[in-house]
Each structure stands twice: as C-alpha cells, then as structure tokens.
Image (cartoon, rainbow, N blue to C red; front, side):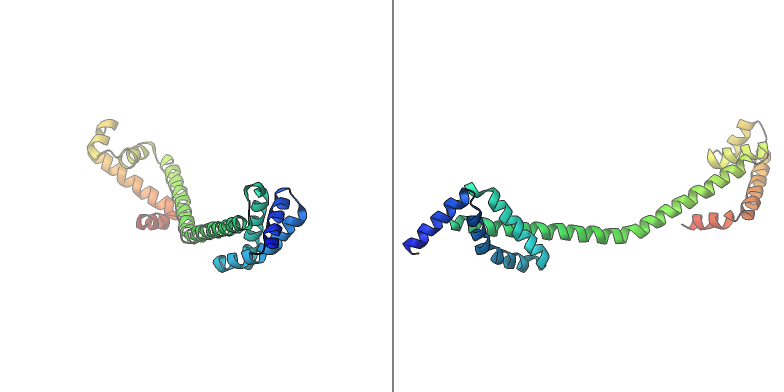
Length: 195
C-alpha cells in the first residue's frame, strides 16, 4: 500500500467518524455492490439481498466511531450481511414450515370443528326431545343414559319395579328414535357413532 493510499484511508476514516456525508457516500460506493452480491449468493433473492446490504450499511453508519481502519469496516459489513442472511433464511424456513403445517392442520382442524358443532347440535336436539318425553319415561332415560345408573338402581331411585324401568326405557328409545328420524337426526346419530 502506498503512503498516499494509507493517508487517504486514514483521512476517509477520520471524516467518516466525524459524520462527513461524502465519506459515508465513498464507503457506500466501495462496499455496497459487493455486499449485495455476497448476500444474493446466500439468500438467492435480489430484492432481499439489497435490503440486507442496505441494512448493514445503516448499521455501519450507526457505529461509525467503532472503526479505525477499512479492514475493520469491511469485516463488520460482511459479517453483518452474513448474519442477516442466515437470520432471513431461518425466518423464511420457519414461515414456510408454519405455512405447511397450517395447510396440513387447517382442513383437519376445520373438519374437527365442524364435527363438534354437528355433535353439539344433535345433542341439543336429543336433550330437547328427552325433555319432551312423558315424565316417567324421560326420568328413566336420564337415569340410565345420562347418569349411567343400572336398571335396578333406577328402579330403586324411582320406587318402581325393574320391569317398569325396562318398559319405560324401551318406550323412551322408541319415541326418541321416531322424533329424531322425523327431524333427520337419526342418520346423524349413526354417523357420529361411526366417527
């Protein structure tokens, strides 16, 4: 390196540290295109490479007092660009992975939500029809199917014979089957049983 080159480098660094606009422009001219090329080789996207190079130059201008020679500036810029490129690639990969996961999960999630809405609608209809059953018939149905009591326990609780419980249970099922089939819910019940 010639003595005049060293002098010019020191002067350029001094002016840059003092905030001289022409020194900043000179550094931009010296490094920007090389940084864009370097970034583009990593991220393979011209627009993103330019953004990364510009961001690195802005970081350099914000840290102008930290540098005493062009070698340090060049090292800082290339390390900064490299790190920004890797961060970009990580974020892009995470985004693509999340998008792929959503593509796989969303339809299934929507189907699951639709199924749950359907189940709740059918159950609401069943409860409405159970409430409309004759008193003893409805009570037997609730004790056996909702509270999970056995025939003998339901008979004891209601003070009726086990045979009456069985008769009321059969009657409740027959009435519910008829009323739900009239409304088109019987097929849904069968489908839900399969799902």
